[in-house]
Amino acid sequence: MNFINLLSESYSIFRNNGILSIIYRGIHHLKYNNKLMSLYEIYIKQTRITDHDVDLMREEIKTFKYSPRISIITPVHNVDPIWLEKAIDSVLSQVYENWELCLADDASTKKHIKKILDKYQNSDDRIKVKYLNENQGISGASNEALSLAKGEFIGLLDHDDELSVNALFEVVKLLQDHTDADMVYSDEDKIDLKNRRSDPYFKPDWSPDLFLSSMYTSHFGVYRRKIIEEIGGFRKGFEGSQDYDLVLRFTEKTDKIYHIPKILYHWRKVPNSTAVKYEAKGYADVNARKALGEALQRRKIDGKVLSGMFPGYFRIKRVIMNEPEISIIILSKDSIGQLRKCIESIENKTNYKNYNIIVVSNNDQTLDYIRSTIKSPNIRNMKFEKSFNVSLVNNFAAQNTTSEYLVFLNSDTEVISEEWLFGMLEHAQRKDVGAVGCKLIYPDMTIHHAGIILGLTGIDEKFEIAGYSDRSIPDSVQGYFGRPNIIHNVSAIAKECFMVRRDIFNEVGGFDTDLENIFIDIDFCLKIRKKGYLIVYTPYAKLFYHELIKKVSEKTNMEELSFNNNLKYIREKWGKVIDNGDPYFNSNLTLDKGEFLVRV
Image (tube, helix red, strand yellow):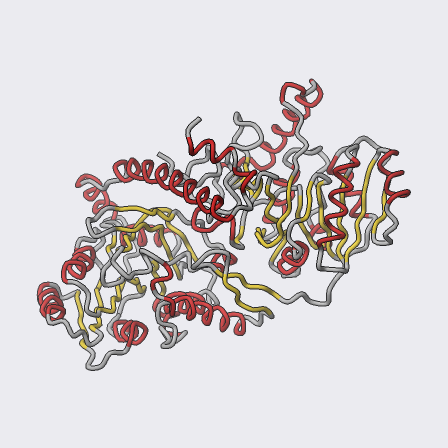
């Protein structure tokens, strides 16, 4: 066994040792990045745009019934000539030609800037330049560039970045089918000083909670000019996060937001750039929090903006309204020791007080334990006389409680974070949210659950129904663009622990009793999403999952038959939805595991 594998195997032993934990995280990050980049290099070769591809795009453009002008706005200030020329050349190279490039020079002191801008302006009448007499900062310069724009849509390009040759073509192609689109964003990567591409960000479709956690839409963003002008363009005082502030205000005016799962933008990694290190511009973080704070005020959200677990990410912590009662429903068949640990962790670590615990069992020994050992008035037990169909039992328990909020909890879990109920309730109380899931980790400090991805190889590797995001990665690492450590939307959450409002539970008819255990969470969440509600994952509700697993070899014929029946049922009921792809998982990422690696 080599050193890296030995370190990985030994992580549970030294996870609390600061230095060794840091070493482990560093090694995991290095291994993951090497694997990601190896696959991304293959992806780049596979997706390289050839002359033949360009010819096909030009032929397709001739069939477009809608060909709006797109105004690219670019503030310019003292950028190196090579990068400025590459940025402008990337616009000139666009296959779709109905564009204009609006540049505002923010009183640059380097003489080459005017020479370059004049050269390009004289070479193509689609290029417009405005020279500012005084430095106005990036927000002011962006507004000056915006004042030159006449297009129906606005695209944002930094003065040292590059658009892919098909960027505008892909945007207008999408507009053929979605003429109502007000905002379109794409995937992106980074490009270094030697034109080497790296750090691909394959993004989900529109995820409002992810957007409040990070400015993930970023590049390449295209916006309807009418709305940009309606909200007043860019605002001074938000430098470094001026785009975040703009799009926060923009998305309060429309929900016609579309995503193109292709890398159309290359973000230049230059020294002292946030493309290299987020902390390079500390004021950007301050202004991002300011933009989020003002967004909360506009949206009448009672809460505050906190820094996230890693740089560049944020947490909107909402105020709990009226401190409602929560019923925690725990199903238990036989493991009294694990049940005891679960209940004790709830009582000892939960800082939200208005809750009760309901233990449901068909095992007299378990019920006797509750009656004789646990004297808390907050805990009661129910006997379920029928066979232990998890859906039936959960529905039975929910019908026999009156609490406004329900938590369904496995007995083989153990509370870690004191705010676990608060962390779920702050979102479950929202009218647009249907259910909230938590972060579950194994005792060895690796992740069991950080959301469920549709189509991912999961329960059984032969069937691509759904699987767990980020499963088995160390809990302490950032993950793919922070995903396991930030609040975001998902298609489904695990049945081991989640919260739902009673009215939502009743609206969707509870759990489907035709499913006995497996896939009940996926079915329940898809019913919620069909009603138009969001599913939220939060890492601020965190529990251990001890996972009492029966070996596959120990499966009985009846259990195998039950699995196959459930599989057939879920495919018949939700197969089209699953096969259509998970909107919160990018189609360029592999479905083999929840590792966020590039599909090649």
